[in-house]
Every structure is written in C-alpha cells, then in structure tokens.
Length: 406
Image (cartoon, rainbow, N blue to C red; front, side, top):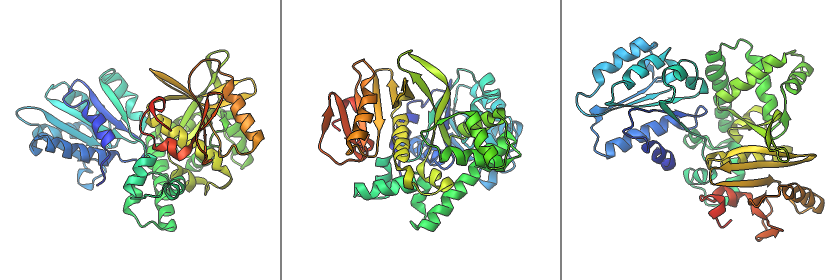
C-alpha cells in the first residue's frame, strides 16, 4: 500500500477535533479508502489502541446489512471506547440511508472523532447540510499527481512517464494490475461504468443512463471548449436523442457531484466579474477521459490544458478562465496570497502561434506573474515578463509557482 503523505498530513491537521466531521471526498478509485487505511495505521503508530479505532468500509460484504441510520447507530454504540477518544472511520458512507442522523448523534458525544468518505458531493447537501451545517470540513482527494505517478510506478524517465500519465491517467489502482493496454483499458472502462451507474444514476435515480452517457461523452470530447446547456442539447439532438436544456443542466450537475468533471467559470477581465454562460469543463483524470472517447490524438493541446488545470486544483488555487473581447486566457489561478495568469499550448515554435498566445497574456494590466506552459524543451525564456515553462517541469515543481525555480 503506497503512502500519500500529503493527504495523511492534511487529515492529521484535524485529529482530535470532535466538533468537526472530517469528510474525505473524491471520484471513485481516487484513493479515499487507502487514505482511510493509512490514517488508521497512522493513529496506531501514535500509540492509539486498536480498540479505540472503529473502521468500516460499507462496500465490504460483511457490512451489507447496515443499510439505515438506525442500524448504523446500533452497530457502533457497543464499539465505542469506554475511556478516551474513539476514532470512527466510515468509508463510502453514502451507502447507508439517512446516515446523517446517526453521525450527528455520535458527534454530540465529544469523545467521538469522526471521519467519513464519499464518492458523491450529494453527501454534503440535503440532510447533511441541515444537521451538520458549519460542523464539517471537506478534504478533497484527487488521482495521483505527476510526481506521485512517477514515484508509485517507479519511473525514472520523465518523458516516458509523462506520455504514460497522459494516456492512462493517475488512478492509484492501476499500480496493482498488469501494465497491458487491454487490461488497463478494461479497468478504466469498469471504473467509468461504476461511476455512472452507482455514483450518479443510483443516487439521483436517473433512468435514462444512455442519455447520461452521451452527455459525459460530449464533455470528454470537448475539454477546454465553451459549453452551454443548449449546445449540449443540440449535440444530443443531432445523435437522435432529443433532450431539454433543463435535463442537460441536471446531468451536468450530477457529473460534477460525482467528481468526474470540473466546471470553470469565465471571468471578464475588463468588467472584473464572473460571466454566467459558456463555462468550460475538465475531466478529473485523463485515463477516464480516454476510456470514454479514445486516445488523446488530435486533442493533445486540450489534454495538456486538462493536466495543468488539475495541478492547479491540487495546489489549492481557485481557477477561472479569463476573457477580454476576442482574447482568452486559459487560466486565472488565485489563492489568498497570490494570483497567476496561465496560457497552455503544445508548442509555440511557430511564430504565429507564439504571438497569439503571448498577446492574450499581455492584456491584464496588473503585475501578477504570467506563465506560458508548453511542451517545447527550450532553455528558460522570458517574453517581456511572460515566462515560458516546460509542462512536465511545472507539474514536478512541488513549491508554489511564485517560489519555484521552473
């Protein structure tokens, strides 16, 4: 079992905070269950007795009978430690109906330190929002970063590793299967189907799974493009499946709730306000994207854009797309203490392409850093304050960009 230290360190920040429910979220197979197991081992390493740790994975067959909040509460009460803190780790909690009531009741006892995982954002809404408002913290887990991917797969060649990462993605479970293209493809297709059926259709009671599949296929083939409900509905109609804008909107939200896609809003640089239409969508993992619509191929530039977007999320940035007249900046990345303007392009060796990408970055008139990320392996280049950076180097830089040397 490979360690994901950054996540364990993050979860550990909230150890012994019984007033807060720790909710670990992320797309299915991103490693949430492993993080729960690693955290249990971490607690044991601190000298906490096993009798003070309750760990349940609701996908485990032995817990199949715990289907309701009442049964969950009855199961847990006899296991609580008589003295000291009880650490309660509940994995894939959404499988228990009305689980919020049981968890809220346990939370009232200040000797219970509670941790949950879930594969759908719906667990943070509804009764959870009502009962636990202001009493939980969300810890978001994503598939492996590029440095993690190289480490987990024991790859020393950055170029080889990057090409594989772009093709198969960063789901941790890939480490445990033969690195055969057929096996990998079947594994990724299985994950996609499980997400669609269990984490979306079953939870939201979606009957038309074929329509849902067509929507996600459309998003996967339109990475980085401006998407509207009407544009998506028009595409579906062209395939012979008429669908309303409202239904498309619902499906888009369901896909976001399952963490398989992320939406970015457009920011009007001149007006300094968020725009309400033409959002962009990115996939949570390139392997899952390729399982949906095939190999990267001609979408190479969009795939690179997707990787950069995910890395910005991992680093804690709020990401929007910049818009000014006919010009566009791929990403405006903001944290409380910094702001970055980023353009992503496969290559700027062509002068026309280079001028176009640089021109977009020149429009913001503030002094925040501007990066042009490409696959050109060239020495450090600066275009009037705009820094060109090799994309694998950017992905490998662990420090915040403003402090890094890449």
